[in-house]
Image (cartoon, rainbow, N blue to C red; front, side, top):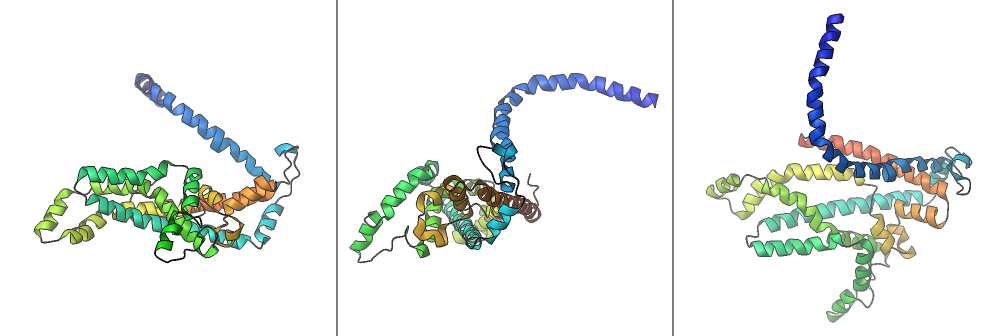
Length: 315
């Protein structure tokens, strides 16, 4: 026993200079990391305490500690709402539609850009596709409302070809299409980045070998490019699966109206109306907690799927 303690003490003594050297080299990195850690605690971890309102008849005047405890009553009421199944359905339909359509266009656009050999043209197209991503949805919504209004640019153009366009923002049957198309317009450039990076990682020798074997450009894309980026496509698709209950609150809040609630109202917008407009904090908290639990479970499932299908460990 005494010899074991002596050996352990000797190992600790030997490791001390190495640790001192490590901290002497690395302390600036930890200092740079500290603001992000503080932000994470203040805005992500500390607000978790507010989840308690889901189990209370919350009264701002009484605070979290003195508000009456109601247990699961808020959840029972939320699940009994006639509109709750519709909210869940709309959320899933809009989120899935956005994911699938955006990934299709992002992959297609990255393949097309990869085939452009004129670098100036390629950079110009990329920049034009990136610009909408850096505009907020408030700005984008103003542009979209001007373009799609009954007297907007699109309506005026279609009248020239004798086509009467429906009001896309005031028709429930067209509203999801409008959400998906405008989401693709805004996010296409940013979503292409990972696919373009995956394309640069493909060995150019594979293209040369395919060309020698007589493969044309389409065959090279089909048999070299797509298999080379398939791992990235599967990984992104699996990770996006965890966001299936996040249908884009900012976009929908700025574009929807009561006329399109049948297809455009989602969990997040209902939480906003119930909590901030109607002051039904317990109900809003219960639905938000339900959404968070399901989302967390989906993130765990998507992480496992991504690791299993791609062979890569996802943190």
